Image (tube, rainbow, N blue to C red; front, top):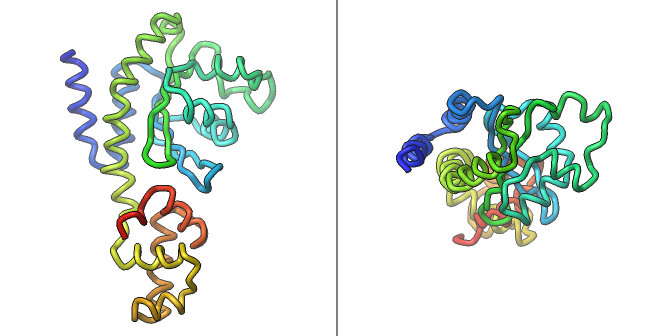
Length: 231
């Protein structure tokens, strides 16, 4: 119990994106994992999700996860920790090929711990564990250990990483709200009694802060994340 309290204290000290990445590096060293990380599945539309990665998740696996709908469906609908390779084998989605070569090591297993998200967003913790921890009973215990800690980790992500990066001003929210109702920049300028150039400036900030490619995608993300509810 004391160890869990100490872990929660470390999680509560996370105050930035760097702090979150440093936390997972420390987890790897402490528990002798090859690597560990957090994957945030951020909605880009009502049916599509873009993963964002924190920690040391290898580049090859990041690419694989980005293209794999199985892990997205599992994390969206399930709460039980699962061996990623076992999940793919059950779905008959893991076959020997150049695409998976080097992504999944036979000496390690990738433990996926689904995390409940906020709004339409969801997430998972993922750890690469050595062979001596691959017995099902041990994996289950480790999985539920991280299930207990996952809400604290996700909460720090929301408060100290996500909100700092996407916090929008009152005027930006007003502009994107009117844009969500189909108003043009000129129409928004008349409604808010500001110049059209100023409206475009605020909407450009919304696009940047939501990591979108245009105002339509920014509108969708703001709606899905609930940013417009209080405007």
